[in-house]
Image 1: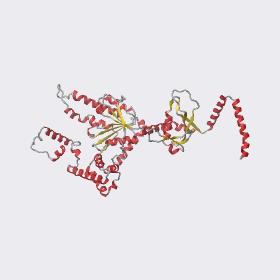
Image 2: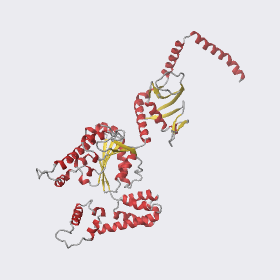
Image 3: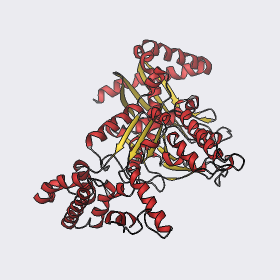
Image 4: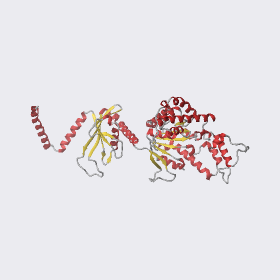
Length: 511
């Protein structure tokens, strides 16, 4: 081995002499041109081509560099052998990144590519309007020459879209509400926002699992349907109508949709909107990837099928007793009509081009009172009904941490029949479980008692719930209650039969 190094010494001396001779004879410009020529010759015979994505492009930050860094950091922990770990101040999340001058592989549409994180020290500190980092960082993308035209543009678009999704999911979601009419918040914004911390998900939502799967599949198709909406020439929006009795989970459904998609929520209060122009300005201020919620739409906008009843209730004009007083009711009615028209135009009209990937959710307790034009605009109607046994099993898991089968034979045998006959909403059942959530046996026994009591009450009233008997679902009962209240205010009983006392059903209605 010693003889080998001894014989190699003259060769090294010759190379050193040649290098010194070249530096003395050839000027620096010629040497630089020779190196460039040699580099081009090597690249010509190489089967790969490279693309540099530097961190700072001139005086501006290269957004593509940040997107690549965020994209590679999402799966670098499983692909790279060396990792760079970091954690921001007051943050509990650890960020994974590619180490200095390290490489990793990726595959896109069956094409293999390689990324290299190049970090070098800056040789000199030149004058700049903004401070530059001491290190010059960049990503180098290596692609085979036959594949560069196939995947380069689409691959970069894919990286930028993935980076946007990662940012949206990591950012804190917000809940917006429109300011009072004619007023702005402290920052001169029409929307006031607070962090959205609702914990409702489709896993905790008390609903039939099959129906939840259909809704989740519909939401997935919408979020991934950009190409479909562009191909068909439709606005990238979707409308959902949630209808049913109070307490059936409409608000929890909206929160679950927002958490599932990672969207912000805009809660639009139509009572604070008094013109179509104001409504358009509010809707145009909503961001993409958001859910605009209009709760109790039947109470916010006068339904068209009740126009006659509304006109009958309006005060008459002094000059024309047959015509409603325009100062009292005409202005509000016209305003409601314009607001409804503005909603329809923004969901599926020309105004829908302002933004994309937006969801509109309307809720109502009375679907029969909605305008037919609004119903036609809805893409999916979701009926929120009473709590079924599959939904009850989800509530038992949420509040008691146990499956229904683990609560004993009595619960397993009696709960399915009892919950079907009781016709209780998930909110009513949640109140019972929340009361005794620390004691499973007591919670189940009290729940059975409440379910059986409600079932007996429904049988006594012909299958109707107490809520329906109070006039919410049956108009006849509502009119009867009004007559009873009117007679009490007048100090007498029913007309034509002043000696008749109130029966038990009427007395219970007034309780």
